[in-house]
Amino acid sequence: MEEPDSAARQREAEDSYVFSDQVGYLLRRAYQRHLAIFQNNACDAHLTSVQFSTLCALRDGGAQSQGELVKATGVDQATIRGVIDRLKKRGLVALFKDEQDGRKVMTTLTAQGSALLEQMIPCAARITELTFGPLNPVERTALLYTLRRMLDEETGEP
Image 1 (tube, one colour):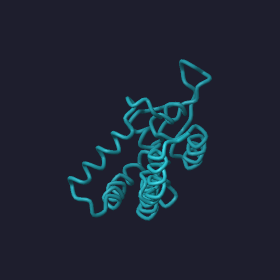
Image 2 (cartoon, rainbow, N blue to C red; image 1 turned 180 degrees about the horizontal axis):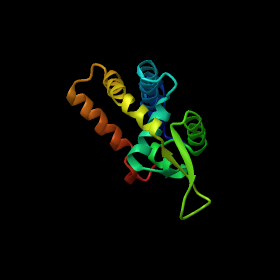
Image 3 (cartoon, rainbow, N blue to C red; image 1 turned 45 degrees about the vertical axis):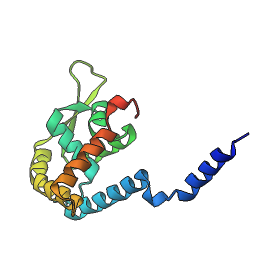
């Protein structure tokens, strides 16, 4: 049987719970805002933010398998497969078999993909600036620090 104080605390917590004040809601809204800013300010109207991050991962890490791209981008396996397919159709990436493991398919950036990234980087910097909006330099640093802490792998949480 629940103690009266415990039941009262639970009711109080339930009564004071406002979903629009919760971290998940606010993160989702901030991400939606960022995606809208990205689409409105990308130098290529057909490039999505996930495609852009995939191209950046390939630029930074060289040729990678789908599994490696999943880790580098934080995009799930099913989504990255479609992203790679769309980038390949546009000639921005190429696929080849890994020399050590012929079963593994590697993805690499093409010259056309590199050229698009060069064009896109100044746009991406503007997108970041617009996403930060009115935050001052201290708030920007605090936000990035806090988000990185939330994603810290040492917590043992996914």
